[in-house]
Length: 177
Image (tube, rainbow, N blue to C red; front, top):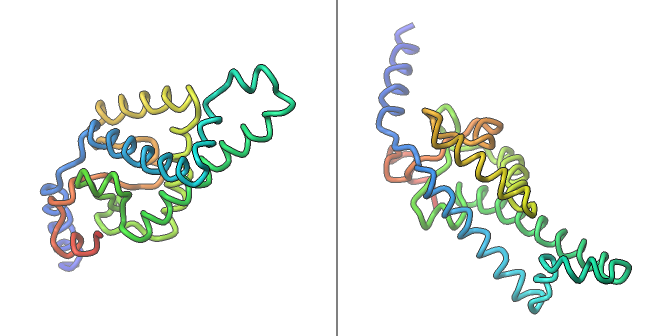
């Protein structure tokens, strides 16, 4: 019985010391990650990935360009999913989040289990959808700003909290890379 009380006191003081990440840092981290991913794809495809955004070529000659259009978007989604999944598994955050000193922890204050990174990476793909992704991103940013916990829908789905890494206890901060 006393063990449960002690755990409760420790977990409450732990959560009181956490500094929740603010919305603009989270948005900037995603933008930095997107720039990194697209930059790698531009280098790997010698710039041909840019055809994914040239809709007028698709409209002018759909029979010849639809395949390249779909292949480019497949590459963007696949590279993004792999990036967010494996950067999360290896570093417990993405490079953009690391640059802005953000950390993702599980709802109970522990590090996120490895199998949850796939789900979180998949949910982040919605932000990459042309036009719709921007609208969804703005809605999520408004949700982050208005809620007490500053959680997006992705955070709710995966039971995570995005915090400033320097506010974490040293035993968890050591696990971040």
